[in-house]
Image 1: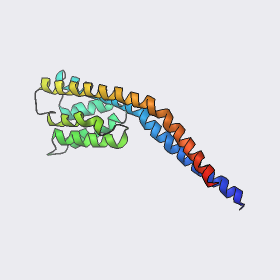
Image 2 (image 1 turned 30 degrees about the horizontal axis):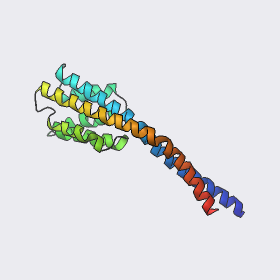
Image 3 (image 1 turned 180 degrees about the vertical axis):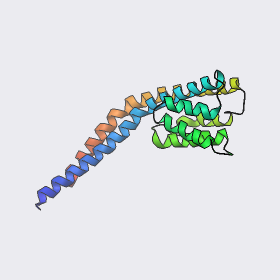
Image 4 (image 1 turned 45 degrees about the vertical axis):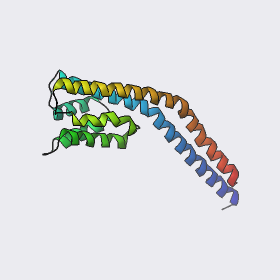
Length: 175
């Protein structure tokens, strides 16, 4: 195989890899505000189910899972499945759901600091108190969403260009 063909193939692979990495990072910046909005919708729906529907938590999680798309659906299904097992508390089920959400979404652990604390009040306090905590978490997520949107505007395009340009730089240096 001629040397120029090997260089061409290697250069193409380097450029494709760095471009994909850049676009993947940019995608996470783009998806994060969307996922935070979806989580706000879940918490508002959960507040409604608890406060006005007086729906038990396993049923509320299942109802909300059927009306939402991934990644929120993954969180709700994991929490509902976990809560249906004997001896599982709402706090444990909520944490299982959050862990599942972190695996499949662009949401960061710092975004969910307040949301994780909800497990302590779900199912243990009265409906009004649970609703108040859920709506407080929604307000926190709205602030995080605004911050994520600002970061998206600053970083999304930069990471796309950085992926392509770093690949070109590597190709130039190596060839």
